[in-house]
Length: 396
Ligand code: SF4
Image (cartoon, rainbow, N blue to C red; front, side, top):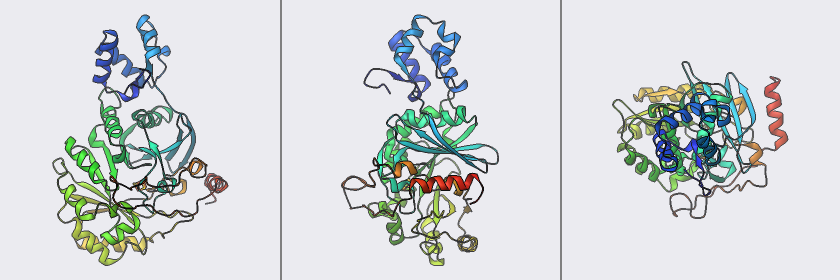
């Protein structure tokens, strides 16, 4: 929470952590912390000098100006479609991340990134093609919520960790960010409105279970009915099989009437057969699970094909026949590459900084398995510009 120069990163602290920090450093406490929290989380003001009340603290104000640090990174690109907004934030080291504001019937959901790039290498995913750069700090995660709320002026009620990165691979920072988000004096987004989506990082799921936060929503990106198919499209499955995954999910603490969310991206000719639906139904039987069926979003140079409406309806009917609780998720945001599995910053992908190496030596999960995957040719920057242009002029 404090960096090496001894600064206090305000966006990384819960209210009680800030109180103890103020107490330790200046002999102050809840009163001053409440005003700081109000300025930041209610007024969206990160410049202490703009608050006459704080300026009147005189000596403390001068000390805080020196000791407190609030880094808010700039938005460098915004693309909108059908009320949905994707924004690109440039970080201090010039890397970029993407976040998406999704308007729902009664509220807004923010899809946040947890890493720059990702190690998991899922073959249907844009982010995977970036390779892995680094984890996001707590401040960089909270900064996405701050930006949505105060720069885009949107009231965010739900947060889903479904943007760039595998959140459980950045465990400590993601969990601290959740604690900061849910603070009632801060964003006040309770855990039951926060979802963490994982490709199936077993150790991370166990660690999350050990926290015993039954309110939190866990979503597993399953996407396959059996190990053979899953290993083909999700290299992590070569390390953690579906059976092992299910065992861990069965022990996951859930609230009353709660369920684990299972995400299934339906890909034509890959996981869309009748036998797949039946295998999936069998796999889910022992679990308290709700299934989200997501038609695959095709990209320009995609390896896979998107299913037709008819394919999706047929697959749904096979699942319903087997009494699976399933709902179809819409593919909002396809035009701006903000659909599921489509967050992958094109500027980054085409920069010389992009490692295009999906996993560190030794692979996922501490050394077993060679999970390296090959990359398909990447779109160029002019291509990206053309896409954006065609969206803006409505010539898609
Ligand atoms: S789907 Fe998620 S876990 Fe898989 S590569 Fe993409 S961002 Fe990473």
